[in-house]
Length: 79
Image (cartoon, rainbow, N blue to C red; front, side, top):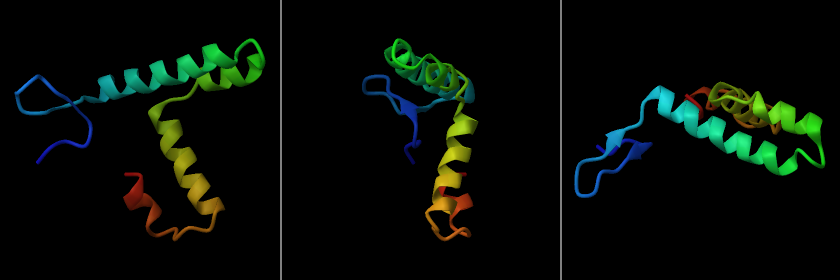
């Protein structure tokens, strides 16, 4: 089976990304957002810089609960 998140090496088999790699990708993405909004909203940029993959999972779950999604399905969707 192909990993959901992987790096590809040409014709080689997909290699699953490790925890540290995924953390780095998320931190890089939120820092790019923070850099773009910092001049207009430094406080919001500072909040983005604190974001982690865990923060994104919790936010996703909370948004689903707030929108009255099936709360029993939420742990399966964001595990």
